[in-house]
Image 1 (spheres, helix red, strand yellow):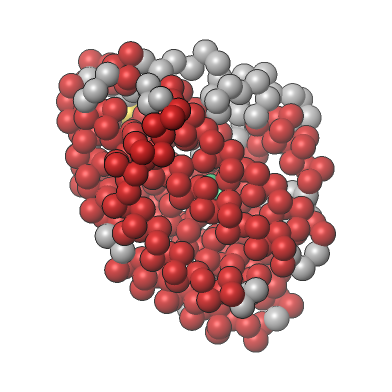
Image 2 (cartoon, rainbow, N blue to C red):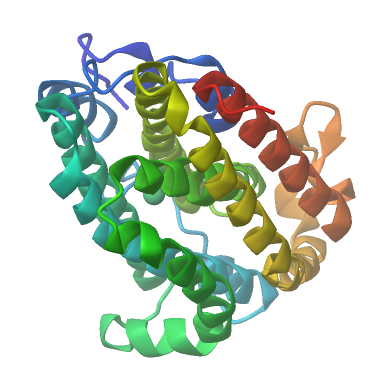
Length: 317
Ligand SMILES: [Fe+2]
Ligand SMILES: [Fe+2]
């Protein structure tokens, strides 16, 4: 990929850090990441030359298109995530509507487009895997309908009072801490585990991950600035975070991950020759990992991410 020389490092295909690393170490604000930034850094930077969210030359290997556990695993994963991204896009229209100033409004307008793009490229990859476009909705319902009901619907119900109250900062907390902060580590895991098996999918994840760094860092800075101006709002927001964390504890997210990773494990066994010595993280070959190990890693990342974001915002205990 030829990123333009004007592309800032955090949005550049070659120089951006990984999602977790970037989201925990970089600092970006809405004033920096306004619409001007997005056109230059993202539309003419990160996204330059991508076709369906990946470099045109990134392959979709034939075995990914053939029926089997590997294909089932990725169809379930991307189907679910495409719906999560779509619902996130719709919820973002509230943040655009109620943003307190122009830079923040512009930033959330760009995030709205980013999430709509993620939904589109995840669906697009299902088509690349051989799902006919006309059957996308039915396929997603069949493979992920239960997960959508069990995971996304409770989250939406939980956020409804915040939306009804036109509570902008509450909405930012829900999105940054409770939705993106929890889901980002799963996206990191996904990029790493598909890297060799499905290079196009991994690149789609990488592009979405670069966007996610911006969403998590700017969202955190919006909350931090709000709390500096309104320290008396901290208890209310802390309570929202706690209730959200309780809700996550009651959602069968582990079941969903376990089903996905079990399918992946079967496919991994069948394609060990393709994966070879590829290391999913330093010193650990993907072929040697287990279902539990990958889930534990993602959960550990998730915890680290939440703690670092809450501390930055000023919402740690
Ligand atoms: Fe997204
Ligand atoms: Fe996002």
